[in-house]
Amino acid sequence: MFLNRILVTNFKNIASAELTFSKKINCISGNNGEGKTNLLDAIYYLSMTKSFFHFPDSFSILHGAASAALNGTYSMDDGTENKISLGLVEKKKQQKDDAGILEDKALKRNGKSYKKLSEHIGLLPIVMVSPSDVALVNSGGEERRKFVNALLSQVDNEYLVKIQNYYRLLAQRNKLLKDENYSADLLDTLNVQMDENATYIYGRRRELCENLSGPVAEFYKKLSGGKEDVRLRYISDLDKMGFNELMNKYLERDKIFKFTTAGIHKDDVLFEISETVGPLQSPDLPANEMPYYPIKRCGSQGQQKCFLIALKLAQFLIMKELNKGIAPILLLDDVFDKLDMQRVEYLLGLVAGDSFGQIFITDSNKVRMGKLVRGIGGENREFEVSGGEVISINAK
Image 1 (cartoon, one colour):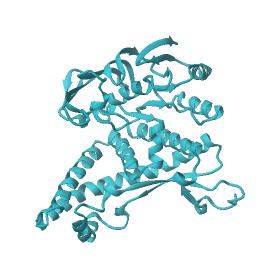
Image 2 (tube, helix red, strand yellow):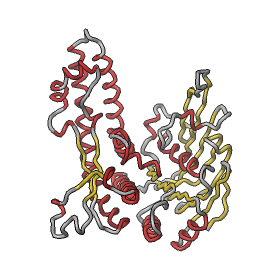
Image 3 (tube, one colour):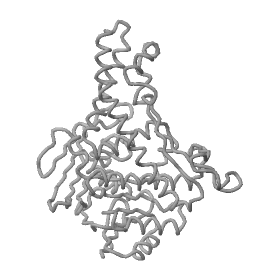
Image 4 (cartoon, helix red, strand yellow):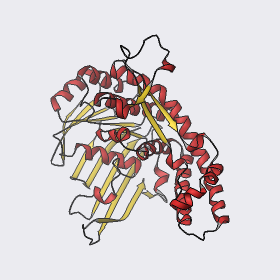
């Protein structure tokens, strides 16, 4: 599966662009702030119906324009073609900050509108690696839950339905708790309904984290030189008891705070790194006895970047495996920063292999990227972005 062509209109700083892509490697160069990342986000939008950066849709419309449109033509693995169109329409509402309030978002596949946007998720699997991924390490558990939810929603439609149901029921429960004279029977009913969804979500998250941990560690060793180990550790309130028992245990606390203080919406995934083998760690000590520490506090910027790239590469492998061998589109935004040339060459050699499919790479250094990609060989196209204008400069 790959993106053949894209037509971008009034999306962020890109007023108009019509581009044809290589089914393998696509290199996008340009100075910072010119629109390279915006082009990748347009591609991400066509898969996920929203921005990778969690911005409101109204922020994706070119300043001064009333609407934006994205049109993509995809060649699927079964030989068919899918034409996806996404339109964003904004109605200005005068407020103190003159914020744009989104009036409409329309998504079509081969000219037919979806009844629900969620029906589209998973059709065009995608993985994006971005400097903003550092939030997965440095921010709270919400960012890591978003990562897990986005991954599982692309490969498991039932998970997507259940996570939507859970948060809808959670909002109802929180609203009920704000009423001092709430109905205990209604609360019990909500608990039962939430339990069914929470149990499934918990199981899929735990399974995913267990499956991710090994590949993350292997990719990290190759990217970092193997001086330390890394791991993922999933923690949840459901580790200790069932959902209904959890709700009953913390009911009094919930009544005081007037919202649900425990549940799978509080889950987290810990990213941890071991001590470097050397003076601080005996190389004879079994791996399962090595002390691990939060990479947020104990990892350097370079170690954190290697970990995040390893995490996204592991995400790619898991998604491909769970999606019957269909390779997701891979977006690599500014991944060369803080990696030495040996690591960069390894990374590019890896993603250029047969296991990976279509790749989009951005870099501010056109000469460096072109030299690296040509050194690897294979089909590629090069693009340059300046002031929101995208120009195809080479096709091979």
